[in-house]
Image 1: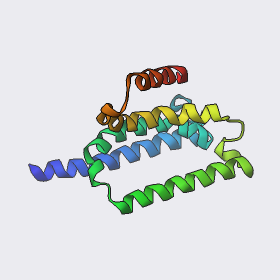
Image 2: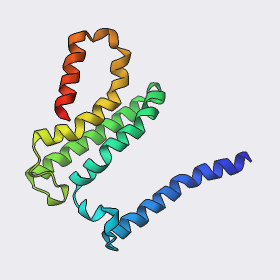
Image 3: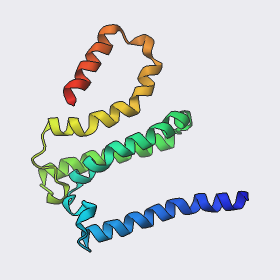
Length: 148
């Protein structure tokens, strides 16, 4: 019985990836308009589509395993962030049309990044609640309300 559960757990990510591949293929190549993917033709569109759900999905994992994050993984994540920043700069300076970055302002980037970042950092902030005074919490609430 335990072997069947293990195999099912191993097949689930594969089945999800296969389903995503079929829907992406149908949306971009097959012309399946119901997928909505044909409208997402730039990296900016994909970031808007996926950044918040990824942050929400990663939050429970990060909360339960954050003490296990080794320095090597931290360096890898830092390198990935650095590469992404270089891509953003190239997208604006080159300009690379497929990124969809040109025309987006600082405010657009704040709207894209702040909510997922706050959701991921909120548990750490809540743990250090003694450091935050009433004015900090009120200011944070007003800032969050202003972004919505």
